[in-house]
Length: 509
Image (tube, rainbow, N blue to C red; front, side):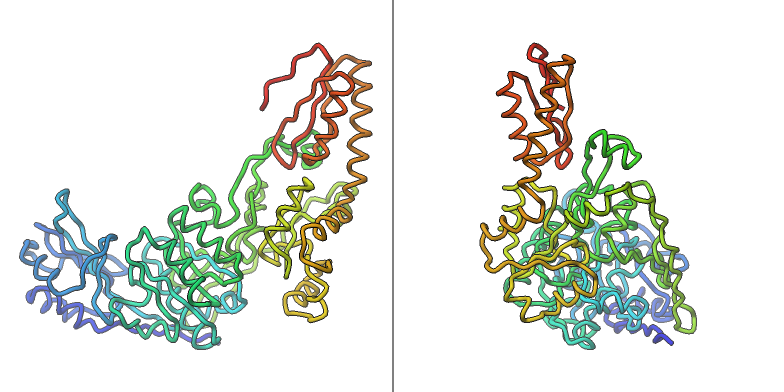
């Protein structure tokens, strides 16, 4: 049976103590377990909010003196208009007028909830990066705090929290005990969160980084940098579902990004789709995505790459639903396996021979990328083993049998090794793997047939999509035979078209 969640409300006396005395007396009779926020707006009656609704606290409106009294008893406000009470998780957010004067306060009750992570603990314990989504107030930050404590205390990981608004570890220099042994880096201003994320990796050797509210392009890039360095990243982002995250151009990169691709005629027929389709641009920064739908209900996408691919292909797959029962147990509703359309004949064999994503282990990431670009191969480098079709490593690594290579064997991912980590060695292996010489011969043979067709039938001929080096061979042949040629489309579906000598080329698409 799962552990029941235990709610620890920080000393409400410290929160009530910053408020005017008349409000304090009325609040002392309220149920602290249900209280969420206290709203103090200039000229309006004070309001208290609960999970089930809200009501007015007293009939007298809030004055400037009331607001000034409260401000004088809390910490200073940062650039994000948030302040706290030292040693607690209580948070006070300010509303300002055009002159910058504070005319309203939102006082949120801070809670450390232990036991909430048990419903998804297995996902955090695997060492993969996890992204949390959910509407405000649903418990994202609470789950982050509990994840940091469990990873640091129970699993013995080196955990660093990037705490921009002091919401995860509380206000003051000493972190709140709710984060356990995890360390905390405070952020001077919200605009520097991305820089502190990188600082955490470079200066403090973490195994796990925890960060709240990734919301800018710079922060998304910092997150990708962290993941590519092999550090587990636990974070939240603005959004409630995978679908609206993909629709956000700033944050879509967290789950791989989206780009429009123009398919060749043959590929479009094989896929039974339109010629222009949406595809995932890169490997996701996060391996797992959790949509927090309620305090007791989570939607889990265990493989973000597959979920995004299915969504963009127009066949969205339902997530796994996990619900906590009143007795602390968990009900898991696993969706049925998706029905896959059978692949065209020969496609699977081609994919096995030509991997789409390569995971480098002990091999230079940048050299592998340069080799792929130099050879014009239709493949990419991935920082995640679970997305890889092939592992490229060094022979010395295979003799050591490290855990990553053992995991690759368990997953059935082929491992290929080179003797030294040089550009020449990498290119030599890739050339053999992708049969580059045979591809050049095929490209030239196809181009020669196209030349004959253009001369005989006096019409343009569109060739098969090929990598850039093979297209160059075809362009050179066209020039030698007195034909006009151009490349059209986007990689990896860009192809050459041959035109009759007197026909002008079509405008570039």
